[in-house]
Amino acid sequence: MIRFRHRAYRRALQLRLSGENPAAELPSGGATELAFTTALLQVLGRLAKLDGRVNESEIAFAERVISQLGLRLVDHRRESSRRAAIAEFERGKDPEVDVLIAVARLGRAIGSASQLARYVLKTFCEAAYLKSSYSWRDAQVGGLRLKDRQFLREVAETLGFDKATMLDVCAEVRGTADWSATLRGSAAYSHKPKFIPRPSPSLAAAYNLLGISMGASPEELRRAYHKQMALHHPDKLVSQHPSPEALRRAHIKVHAIREAFEMLRQTHRARA
Image 1: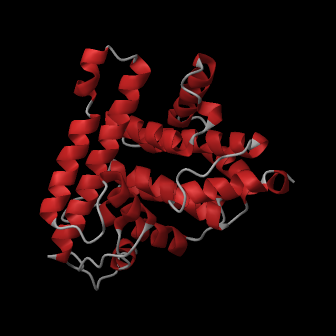
Image 2: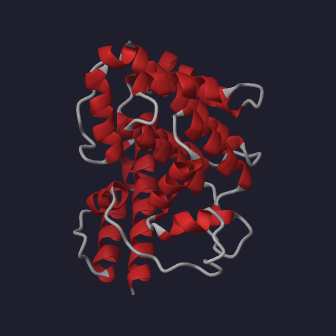
């Protein structure tokens, strides 16, 4: 029933997650928004804790996703809301908590195996890759740790997707369809597969964040990166005596700029 009541919220959320319209206005989502926020925070917490430690980049990723999605239920300007968000993240880290219960509730709210559910799964895949080594020569299949891969599969199944779809979504995050075969353990790939760039919302968002076109040269990419860092680095705010919240936003911004630069730099190298 809540899927029908909050249809406008789900549509706006999909526009933001897909990158089609990152600034789409989010109407009140009620129970659907609560289900999404709870599952998002708990899953991010569990992924961050699976290797036994939580690093700053994982926390920054969670905060960036929350900021980009404009979740009212995680309003950092309201201390009670901020405490509630931290509590859900901590619940996800607790091995005694069944995170899949929150995921199942989310699946019922947004539709099992729906396009929106796929975008949510993609967000979780991005979080999992954030903590991976990205090393092709390590023993981790596709750069994902075994625990992360197993957990993502459970999350995917709870959202209505089979293993093959989960691997395809991971391949989208990596930016090449060949990676999907590698994740499946295909013996055909005993070495790093040729990177085939594909248009994707994440790449488009990276170009937009740095303010350059998709045809930009490596030199233009570097100049754009240094320009954005000079504009948004937290050190620029010191003389203005910024509030803790302003500094937090600045740190999230520069983290996103670095991620975008690294993503596009790897894309340029692969094309060379």
